[in-house]
Length: 275
Ligand code: SAM
Image (cartoon, rainbow, N blue to C red; front, side, top):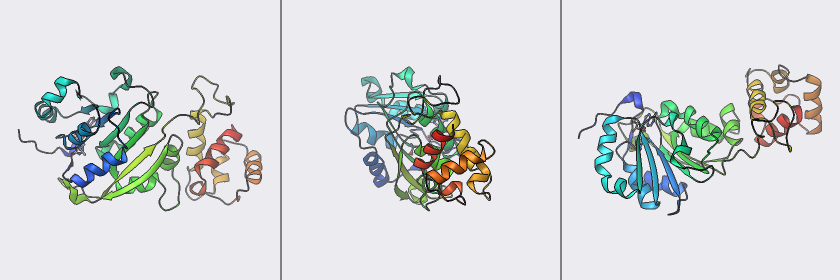
């Protein structure tokens, strides 16, 4: 069956064996691992994943591609090696497929138009993966790891849940059709909610030294709200200026500092102490 790539579904298919191998390597895959693949497309990455692990769950939104995949992987589907789901990843509930928090990995060449939604879903999800290896736009990968030394809401949000690493650049020429921009493989390991208190805890006030997720993001968003303002001025929209100054003094942070210069460790301390 001939398939014409759909732009609306971010269909840029991989055609480089080297990139497929690099993604599997970044996943640090063991036979016993369970891998969730977002958007298997025509199944090129799926094939490599199936060679590496005993169970792959792949979810594809495109009806035509699903037909191609059902035919291509008939044997693997029958044996249970591959679970192929026709559906939307953003509506996917991992627990329905018996996936448990910290007990599966996500490895995927994702549709770029839903990159943010995919990160949000899998990092804040109750049933989080332990590791994610994603092929994303190069600029997004660079921003996640703060390659230029400047943090952003995106980098702080990802680092609050796991440890991101920039693996390698992937030129646009390795895709068909070629996208407009280059890509990069980004790996996020040690994903957990260890920094955050249970959502049932009160909004203000910590539990066992942990921070309310909602409060953390409230303070991070306030901190980055106005790019030109220094952090203290941005934060005084949500916290008393006196308290912020005391925190800065105690932690040897310069009063002129901007949100982009604050490390994840300092953001966590800031949220904990100002709660
Ligand atoms: N994995 C294939 C590859 O590397 O060649 C295809 C990658 S392509 C960038 C993204 C894939 O995600 C496409 O097959 C597309 O149909 C699928 N897709 C787009 N939106 C989706 C969604 N919301 N849920 C699941 N799959 C989706």
